[in-house]
Image (cartoon, rainbow over all chains, first blue to last red; front, side, top):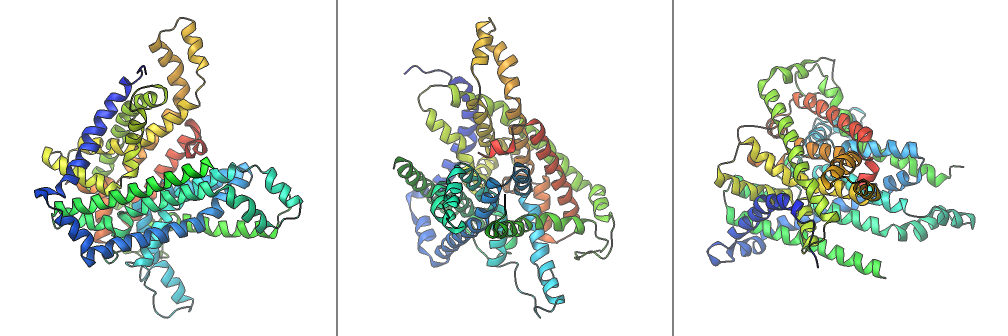
Length: 269
Length: 263
């Protein structure tokens, strides 16, 4: 094969090799320093750290579930409404997406705190007597992460629903199908790809999440990324941080690889 | 078209979800204008004190300038490297093209915490911690996938007969590139550049490790949130939201449509 057009890629490739590939491989190398797998045994063997992995997995799964629950209606409405409302819908999805995660996390702290907006409103209206703990716990992290990741679910679902030929649901409706039947028999199977793409994206992004659990978890909700940061910055334990990173990385790639395999067999059918 | 009951239910549900999405953005506006000396909601009265405190604090202003020029430099560098890369990936034919395509997108797949720790380890060795250009390099790695995706999409939709016409009329390859290809790609270039800028301007994880004493705006915000909830943050947040809105309007006006980039 004649090779052409490679040269323009070279400068970017050098950057990626020197400042991305090399440092990552170098750091992962720390985990087997001295030729032992002791750090991996610690990461995957001790109950304390296994629980962090399990926590991360559980949170990622729940975040994905709630993003799907909230994201599907939004994507669906945006794809089936008039152009004006679709654009308005896009603005309201993209504005939070492009607002700093820090700003949003700060706002959630204001909303969810002991003396936060929610608790004050609920107490003043007499619904509850004592503030419900919403911050520095599992619930807080979940709310914050769903908020940050929801747009990543909405966009693929939107494009999947857009691809459905509107004549099909119209024909079904003309033949007397109920809205629910149209959704279950037409939209759901035809938009499975979008659901899948959005879920994989949200799940994988959740696995490596740092800012939201660090701030809204208040040190009480340990996720893998927070643990890695602590090992590097506080414990200065590079080999252990490297082993944890390697496990996270392998897990991330495995999810992607699995997802790609599944979509490939699906399109092949 | 008659609105069915289930459709009405959908609209109501979506209204609530949009409320959830916008709630954090809406709550910071009133807090930033609060006259209370500490966090209180709803605010007892209105004042500009938190904006004044932000503008009067050289630390905040320094951090803002630093983030602006690091973001600008990142956008320039990411375009300078990413546009040729996108050309090579879309139009080139060479061994390992698919592999390079994967590598170029990998920085969004690899968790940012891993990238941050890895680059931090390297930069500590090279004594680049606290250097603004060190952060520009790391942010460029993170911004490169956006540039490649947006420019790549623009190139795939490109009508090549226009270039062939220019070359057929005797224009050199460079002249065709400068007079035909790049001007036609301008919407994609604008979107890619602005996305790269915002991605750097908002970036906090890498900055957390590498900014050192020279704080960027997100790093300063992170530290402030960690220490105390001071409404100054709300004032900074409002300005950040306004800046992002302006950038989004710019992308909508001069860039490739938002909906096209979302695809």
